[in-house]
Length: 102
Image (cartoon, rainbow, N blue to C red; front, side):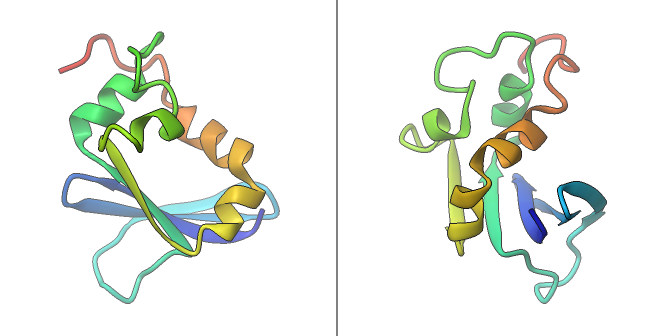
């Protein structure tokens, strides 16, 4: 996978740059022109629950969060779908860093 994508926490967006399967950089998105191929956004409390050791139902996977309105996607979803497991694994990296959900 080689692309940039956005992960949003409430009003804060972060641009994650991936080159040949390695995270090349993460920076706060300060300008609208700093855009990724696609974006995944959720509230901070949703991400906190997603990152628990054992997330509660509906918070364990982005595909479970979407129909409940806990997360949203936009942009060109083709690279996301082509690299779905990779993106899900990247989003799960902080799992276990939360002691309890807010």
